[in-house]
Image (cartoon, rainbow, N blue to C red):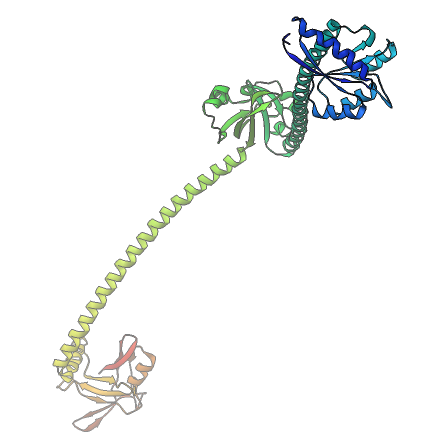
Length: 462
C-alpha cells in the first residue's frame, strides 16, 4: 500500500467524545507526510454499523467493544455472516486478555486499548490489518481455487477409481465367461506369448494328449509336426495378421503318444496379463479328412463307372441306330419287292402261273400221273380248284366237297403221303372227259403256307 493512499475508516462507538478525540488524532497526519491519509467516519449504534457494512464503502472498521445492548463481538459475528471483506479492529477502554482472545477468535484483525492509541500505532494497525486482510483474501482465494481443483481432482479420481472398479468387474466377468466357454467347448484353446503356452483349456488334452497343466510352459512349436513349425512362429503369424480376419491354417500336430493328427487352427491377437499374446483354437479334423478322402475315392470310381456305362450306352445306341437303319432298309426292300410282285402279278395270267407251278412239281416227281392245285378262298376258308395238269400224263382230279385229303392237309398244316388208297374210298375220285375212274393207289398232298397262313394245297398222285 502506498503511503500517499487515502484510507476510508469507519468508527463504531456509542461515545461521540471518542470520535472527536480520534478525529483530532488522525488530523495530525496532514502536517506529517510520512503517513497515509485517514478519512474517519462515525456511527454510534449497532444498527447503523450493519447499514454501513452493507454499503461496503470503507477500507477498515474501528469497533468499540461496548455498544449498548450489543458488544463488539456481536458485530464481528454479524460481519462474518455478511462476508465483510474489510478488516475490523476491536477497541476497548482497558486491556483484557479474555476479550482480546475472544475478539481475535471472532475474526478481529487487531485489538487496541484506547488509552494506548497514538497516530503511528493506529496507522500501523490499520495498514497491517488491511494488508493482512488482502493477503488473507488472496490466500483464501487461492485456497478456494486449490480446493475446487482438489475437489475436481478428487471427483476425477473417484470417477477413475469407479471406472477401474467397473473395468475390474467387467474383466472378472469376461474371465469367468471365457473360462466357462473354454472349459465347455470341444475345441482346444491355447494362449501363447512369445511362443510359450500360457494357458490351455480342458479340451486340449484330447487333441495333444497332454493335461492342461503339462501344456502350460511348453513351446508351441514342440507340438507341431516339423514341416509345419515355421507357420506358427510369431513372425509368420504377425506377417499374415489382418485386424479384421484371424489367421487360419490346416496343419499336423504330434500328440504325446507320437500319433499324428490333422487340426484346423485359427489364431487371433489379444492382450493377456497386460502383454500382447495370441489366442489359438484348434479342431481335430483327422476323421473328416479321412472321410473326404474316401468320398473323393468313391467319386472317382463313380465317375469311371459312369464313363464306362456312358460308353456302353453310346455303343448300344449306335447299334440300335444301325439296326433301325437296317430294318428301315429291309422294310424299304420288302415294300419294293411287294410293289414289284403286285405289279408283276397284275400283269400275269394266274391260271397259267398255277399250271406252271404244277408242271414244275410233276417234273420234280417223274412218277406223278395226276396233279391239281387248290387255293383257300379269303373270307370263307374253303378250297377252290384253281389249276390242274391237262396233258397225256397228268389228269385233272376233282375232290368231293367237304371231303378228302386236301382238307386234312389244311387242318394238319403238314404234307400227307398216301401209300395205298384202296382202303380210302371216297377220299380221291378221278374223272377224265366226264367219266369217273377208280381210286388211285398213292398220292402226295402238301399245304402251301405263307406267313404262317395256309393259302392252298398242291396234290400229286399215281
